[in-house]
Image (tube, rainbow, N blue to C red; front, side, top):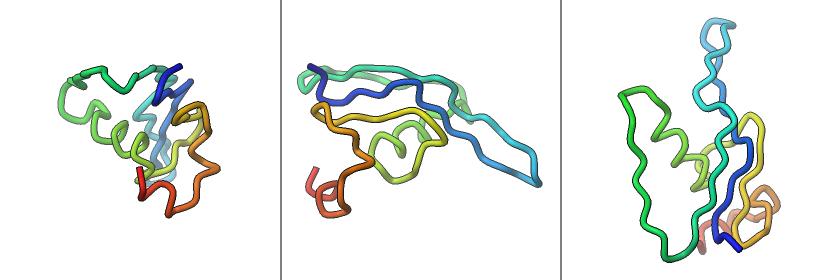
Amino acid sequence: MSNLRCQNLCKSFYIDKEEIEVLKNISLNINSKDLIAISGESGAGKSTLLHLLASLDKQTSGEIYFNDENIQSFSSSKISAL
């Protein structure tokens, strides 16, 4: 069981009616004792990914789970308690 898991995570932004796809089909599993690093060039979507995983922003599509519960079902207070 992964503590934090995302499946087919996508995030797009719209600038002047043009869709900019920042993240496309990201899937990962992170366990509680895992140490991870997220690296990439400037503008590659690192901060966007972290914002999505922390529920600071909403994904365009895909799902994020914490302890096998979809975080979209979490209340604001439950997210804050994490």
